[in-house]
Length: 99
Image (cartoon, rainbow, N blue to C red; front, side, top):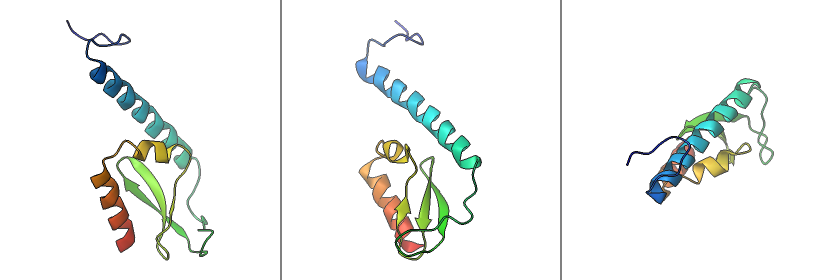
């Protein structure tokens, strides 16, 4: 029996994996549209006053501080990163720490 769009699969894990993938795709498109509508010039990190730099990781664009290595997440970005493996999140943190 083949899976039909809009109907749950016989395999529950497959169904939820597809649903999560669709949600992530919609969230990425929505966040990309929001980000494109505004400019990053002038975004300042509240802790140290340094300018934030956009950095892309796992389909999410984070705003990172090059001075104190803080990271600003826009609405929905943390939920998208929650789907990443621990190894990926540690790699992101290490990359941000080196900048």
